[in-house]
Image 1: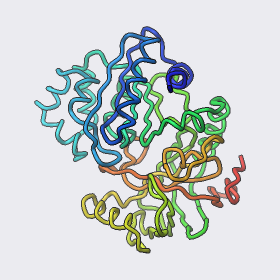
Image 2: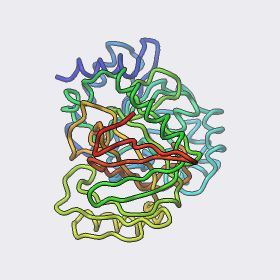
Image 3: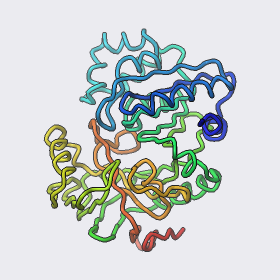
Image 4: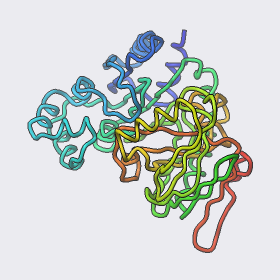
Length: 358
């Protein structure tokens, strides 16, 4: 029942051509994803016969590297065998210390039949992974990442004027790239951090050129803040996929969460993550929503794209201009914010109570 929308995704968002190869990925976290992949495969075959797909066991968290079977499907057995022989592959999967340069050189030397287009809609995100980075930066793959995707999104944030979303996203990204610092204020939130020297990225939803990647639904401009620069407090009312029973507040010092205030089950989850991954505390991303069709606050894939919101993430950011590498990345949306950006001798109000001022 979603084939027309999926076909439009291929043609409009991905610019998929009949001579290109496509890799489709999802996981077992939700039953509806298992049903949806069949429609993605059938719609793709109306354009190209070079279609591969994989359904892999749920990884249970965002930002974790996909399992070995996915790597082999994307890069071929020779490349993965060589990474194993060099002792790199396990370090990659665990996001431990390793040379990305060396890993990428091996992939380039041994990979076979790498797809030109990837549409990944596992429940848990593959965006902030070396797998995605290797495909886009190393092989020029066009990559759509759709974590937490629900089919109803075809009728809202996917049903927009993508040229408008792209232009607005690019304009905001340019302003963030010029800025040296950012100040965010909202109810319960007051944070400052530096972005000097960090290039912002526009998530336009149009992945037509070599190496382009982003979310679908798309519609944001985002940047990796300087990791040790965040001070202040961030109050969150929504987790990735639900409204919290009670708000909790993350207190930042020297770029990382040093304390959580408030009592809510999601606090316990975060504290367990921080015990397992110390670097999960670190500020990772600042983004501005630019999609006028995005409305839902209880699904972060859509919520972070809502026009007039901003989001702040913690965890991994090494794949888009930062230096923190960890098997965790989660965004928290701030509603009706006041955002000021600036540099030496200038400042600009970017958002005023949720109204974007470009």
